[in-house]
Length: 389
Image (cartoon, rainbow, N blue to C red; front, side, top):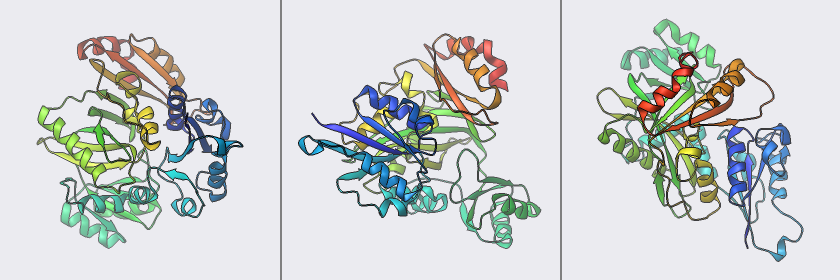
């Protein structure tokens, strides 16, 4: 029997749910996180490394943890993957990996972790990935030229290190450009023309080592202060828009290097004119795919592990219920909201085990499955104040 050990750079809630999925299919998951065994992932893993997932020495320590005495007498597969894309690619490349494989590849991570480079890559891919206009902004003057060309408001974004709305600034007019550059506090920024979308949607795309690509159902999501609040599956879209979203999602992942293996969260905009525009992609399980644990034939977390480990992809990742809604519990009232949501018929809870409640911090989520949208809406009436908050 082959043993599979997967080292994960990062130990947050994504790593936690990855580790739980690993237990279920006999894959050992070892996270590297500053909190070590106290991190969300460390709490449910057999072992963990304490330290920064950007520290080359700690990454090397994680690699060594994938080896055990007696391994020479058995067959062992060793893999490094990520639960956050903002890793130190240079540090990873400097380590002697021997027979340890990295998925998604460093080349893939370099493209995705720089949002401006990511957008350029998609635009130049010739795979019909539509998106809003964008350009690098190096000065207030260039910000003014962009505004004159594409209008106001527009979105100013940090090219690197941004997530959950951090690193974004809405430029309202020409006078606001200086404020935006000051707010982002980095010289490396770019601008995107404004997307007057009807809905934010997403699709999780799964890719094997051999290049086989599968798509989970398309979801629509809502945000609170740029942080995902709810995810509804299936998305309320026309059949044509749904098919187009899946097509674009697959093309995004096809455009990436051959080492783009695992689950990729592709965020899109559903426009009022029926068009679908690309927003961004994450090279890992994604908040918009949490619903898959209860609602689909195989969760995004198990699918990711199977893909990076070189196992066969799951035969069925389709929706197994009529409708599903995932609700993130955020901030100081998170536990109170979490317990109330658990009382809803069809609810399943996932508390992340984080030490400290903070404003806007994701502390857990609850997924509610129902036969149909009408039943779901009726069941949610008892928490309408939570959803409207």
